[in-house]
Length: 331
Image (cartoon, rainbow, N blue to C red):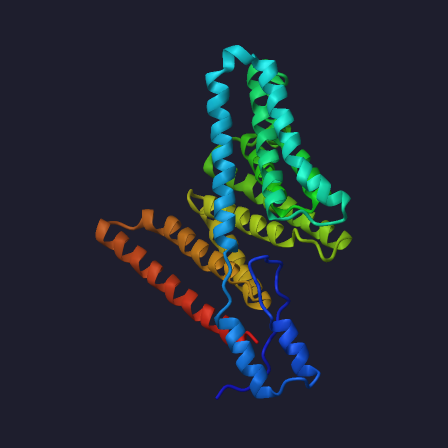
């Protein structure tokens, strides 16, 4: 029998979790229900929860993509009739219309619902498409076109903070990562090209900026809904940068130690906070980086395949053990 205190974690914001656990624990603490009744109720609550939130999100994502595809097809068919300026204005008006439900919710003092939040995401995507089309037709910035990507990151961030929308913040961080990737004055000033190690450096720089943004956001708003979005983007970008360094010599000697540190930090954070995704990040990215760095240096296809198989099996076993440890530590 295991002994010792269980570690408890605050649950991250997740609309997919529908449970009566807090109410049941409160009734038990007040003595309204006894230990046996509380245990049975908690077991039933945990085992029979049914949520269609995942399916709803997938449907809404598909809807957003279909709308964007439909807009593109309509514009392509009627380009000559409408004209470039008319298309720019029409897309802008459509984006503004998508913002209206969230705006009404904000004026009523409510957080936008799921449908309104996905309409905000659609508005952000329409705005992105509108700026890209305007730049293509009118070459507003010419050789400085990459600054449009940074402008999108700023605009999306403003919308995300105005309506407390994690989805639109994700669009902002995606645009920010894209700007670091395509260049701009920052890249020119640092003499950064587009080789694999240099792209890795850009990814690491973007991850560092997102971490700094997260720290500033948490200090101003300790209960921010954006913490998870910042954490996931920063972790993925940092791992991508480290793996990029692992691909080419002599950067491998810097990439592998960095990858090891990131993997340890990610696993440690996953265990401390109860977030399984960070366990997956640490183990899977470490396996990918190790395989990418060492496999090309091995001689013979059989040896390479054997090494890859060992790495995959070791990663699967490690992830299984960590997941078990996480489940054992859960309350």
